[in-house]
Image (cartoon, rainbow, N blue to C red; front, side, top):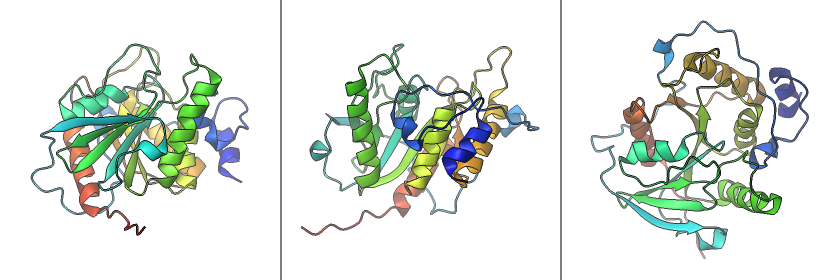
Length: 263
């Protein structure tokens, strides 16, 4: 059974859309919560690979906005490792970027869908954070949505300096099929990615606790894609998870080698 078929088994209702739905505005059903014995003590990183030491200077000292891009040909030179942040609209992407940098680099808005370009931030003159347009936001024109998502897909598939995609998931809610599809698309297209759970301090009344939602999403991704990516629970409000995630980025940066391109 392919991944789209497996997804229909973990989502409520019937779902038969392609895995590229994570780059469209199609609304999908929520995935069922998995019955797991989990507690708040489980809000720690998991599935971590063996990587080089992050060193002592893993923290961010300086960040500079470089440019916003709507076409691949206008991206900065591919000469430094890049870490792309993407997630469902209103997942808290800008808040996470600002938490990591301790600077107001990314604009935080109460209106989802603000990010419409690939935004490059140069970190300590050595690597980039890339703020990507969110997916799943319907209040823009169809042509505009398709333009953002074509750019994001091309960036993920073609950018030689892309070290890792950080897929952000709202831990305050049960798994959403559109997020599971996005993880499956990344896995199927062999794009290196990790999961970053946001809003782990938020427990909505009547809903499962964040730790339960994290376990449910991890299981859904493994079921659909056959992979268990590294994951990091975080909270922009409390600062939870900042240091482990920064250390992980430093480790990836040390391990990543940009392919040589001869013209």
